[in-house]
Structure formats: structure tokens, C-alpha cells
Image (cartoon, rainbow, N blue to C red; front, side, top):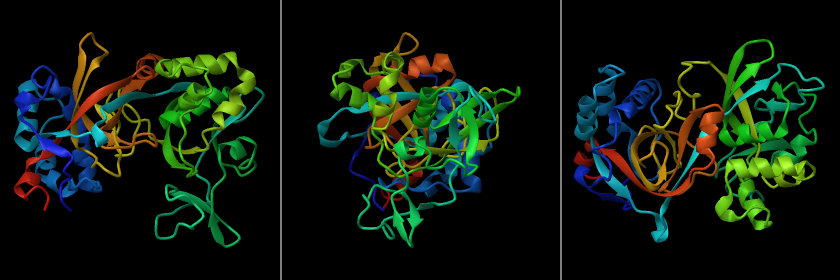
Length: 369
């Protein structure tokens, strides 16, 4: 597999903000990937960044301490990686958004207050691919169900909200607010403060297969929120003002997420995500996993975005993915857990230049050939 022509080599001196970023903050995230990859190697993305090319960098990272000095971390990345600018498709600018881990109250049982279930993966949900996908299903479907001896589309959000899965014992927990549940679906994980005094974490397990539709775009098309003002906060505020229209809007997004419980892990870190490691706030990046290879370091330059009083120019590690994260120059920054992180994540919608740090071993192999 050849390395994609979308990668254009540059030097570290031409990487905006490289010399001023605290790159040591990203090293623990990379090191966690190094240990995970030793147990189960990551899959190579379609852009040709071979997972095997990380072997040397992973071995060195595992031999180092989790916390390293700034110059040690900088030398590590510069020794093992070469920066490449990712050319956005059709000349369009790259785009970055933010996400977080909601923290909500939940009950292990449903009652008069806790009426909204979060479901585990149903046993009749099956994985499909291009080899066994029925011709009447859209090629984007990765899940379906077997009915009458053939694969058909799984129940969508409206059908499930109306009880398609009721009575099957699939409830992981119950929430008091269906808008909270919907945004947990959007984030793909949550930290749950249970009514019995315990804390639980849940993360993505599977989805219904239906294409994702962003309700912010729906509200903009309906003229309810100006497109330039669509954020998580303005969407929540609109839903709170229009409770009689919640079903109408949420059901536009037919995709439905199923969850699994995951170990609580380190409390200062985020949930275990698609790369099977806990996320690092501000340093973990969700990318298109079909295109990119997990553990790839990315340097994101979003000069119009500021979360600490300076233009957002940071080294991050590809450790997650999402239905809305498509295209090479597209990423979603994990901002942390709880309401404060959500307030920051919800307003991140900015143009950005994406740079991938690719293993020098890949260069020695002749650019992946």
C-alpha cells in the first residue's frame, strides 16, 4: 500500500507552533497506544500509514517513563517522526470540532423519575461489510439484523424510542432526561453517578447502522438557529424551549448508539475509546479510522481557536473516531469530562490545518511502497 499523495512533507521549523507547544503533554497518550499495540496491533488506514512502521517508536516509548521532560519528548517525536501537511480535499480548509465525556446521574433501575434507557448491544445486531451487505441497504451500513432469513436495516432511533427493544433486558441504566441521553449518544461515552453511590463508565459498543444526521444542521435548515450559531449549547437551549418538538428533531438522526460498561480506570483520564486506551484531555484526537491509523501523532493548527488565550496549535494523538468525523483533514478534540469540558467542546467549530507526524521507518521503506 502506497502512502497517499495527500501527505505533503514539511520541516519541523515550518510547523506553526511546534516550538512553543508543550509536546510532553502528548507523550503519555502515545505511550498508552504503544502498550495497547503490543497486545493487539492497530489497523492500517487507507491513506497508507502502515501500523508496522510504528514498531520502533512504540518500543522506545514503552522503555521510557510516562512523564518525561519537555526536551526529551520533543527529541523523541523528532527522532521517530517526519511532519507532513495533510492536503484538504478539493482545496477546502480542514475542520476541527470538540467533544467530551458527559457526567450525569443515572439509576440501575427504571422508575417514575428515571425513564430513559441506555441500551447494551442487542444480540440480533450483526456486523456487515461489502461482501454480505444486501443490495437494498446503503453501502454505508456496517450493522444490520437478521429477519426472515435475510439481513435488513436495524431499528432506527424513532422505532427504538417507541419501544422496539423494550422488554428484552438490554438496559444498562436509566436516565432522567432524554436530551441528556441523546448527547451521550453523540459523545459516545459517559461517566455515570449512580443513585446507589457508585460511579460507572460506559462507552460505545455498536450502532444501529443508519447514517448519522447532525441535528444542528437540521435546526439550521429549518431556520430555527442561524448556521453560524449552531453549537451544543444553542441546540440544548432550543430543545429546552421547545419540548413539544424534541421527538421531531431527534428522530431526524436515525443512527442509534449502543453501549458497554468499561472499567473506571484512571479518574483523571477520559473513557476508553476506539483505540482501546483512555483518552487524554486536549491531547486525544478522533479521526476517520478508515483513512488514518490509530496512534498517529497529529499537529493541529487552528489559529482562530483559543482555549487558553493563545491560538490552538497542539500535538495530539489519534485515539478515537466518530460517525461525523470523515475526510482526511477532519478531527474532533477530546476536551475532558463533565460540564466545564462540555462548555468548551460545544463551541469548537473551526477551520484548521492538519499535520500528520509519520514514522521515519515508513520513509525508509520508500514512502510505504
